[in-house]
Length: 368
Image (cartoon, rainbow, N blue to C red; front, side):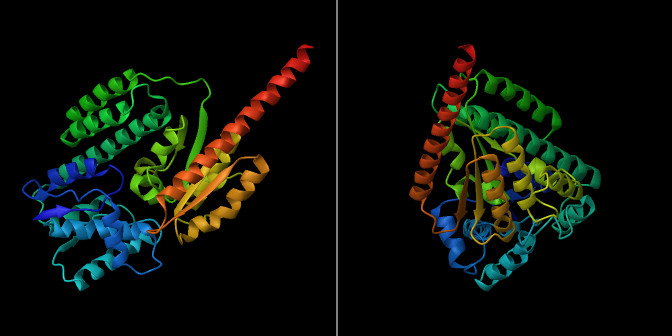
């Protein structure tokens, strides 16, 4: 068998390890990176008004099948995303592709028993205890990757050697990909944790800080938001992002929902669905922390995030917090995105300068 799966950021590094442990005799094919061709392929064969995560995933699957894959692994869950796999399977079969469809996640959330059964149906020789070990190793890898990404987002905008963070991250992922034991994984994590902290940066005491919130795929997949985090780093901005696999899969869903409603501090009374309540809660928290601005991203037609937008506008108005909204589909212009980000940077920079000047004038008045 040749197994492949759709992309989501760089998490293929961890998922590939899980597949290698559970299916050691099979070939793992990493689908080509997301590109313009990927979204064009997906959009061509997708319903017109389905959101772009569906189209990117379908494009990934078509490119993988064309490259020789005959088993497709998908992970459902969340909003309508939980139903996408079966629809994508039917589209691909109607196109004439022959393959095995493999979903270890299930429709009712993640279950070790269900996932293990899915691997056994695929012919895995591993026992249940080995699967538990592999699942725990994969989860831990993802948590380490998320922790490293947080550090990078806070510092990459201030690197003194251009490209130093990206270069080291690629080396880290290459070593982590081959770590199929906790010992090797911890060794790689400790080594690169030290190396990342040694990278030279020139960071002011209070840099501009922008929060990035919204729908999970569009926030987490760099190509889907036109490398927004890198673009913000070019303006020496520290980026705060809260949606990652650690948050999505490794924490209790009901507890998350209650906490998000509570942290919204009256702006939300009930769960809005998908990531929308989380968007409101984090926007409210960023406002309390004196963040310079918030960027909300979503796919075109994402109902939960559309419900959150009026609430985010209220938070921005009442707390004098600039909020910029982006809605992405296959026709979104990269130039338009960069132009709006540049204008947003100019606005929050002037706002920060005016605030600091006002504070300075008040201090001088007190001294006199």
